[in-house]
Length: 114
Image (tube, rainbow, N blue to C red; front, side, top):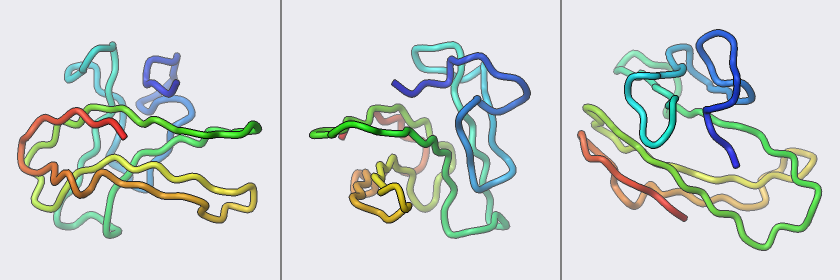
């Protein structure tokens, strides 16, 4: 199970990465744990979307993958979503699913499970 609770040094959770500079651990806004991750984005942010991700090596057959999470968006004008992508060893995308269609916007709190 992926969580942000693992020991860490610095301001980002060990084993996680992002394509943006302004992200990191947050101990003040949490949901059921000691840590959460904060992503800050504005009109001047690079790229079309912002993400935080983790890579999980899977060396066994997967019949079902479950993604659970909690988003607390603030002032979102586009959307916020969870996504799950499965890649081959050659980094080719094998499967992709997004919760974008749930339309998490504004300041709504949302639990997600897929």
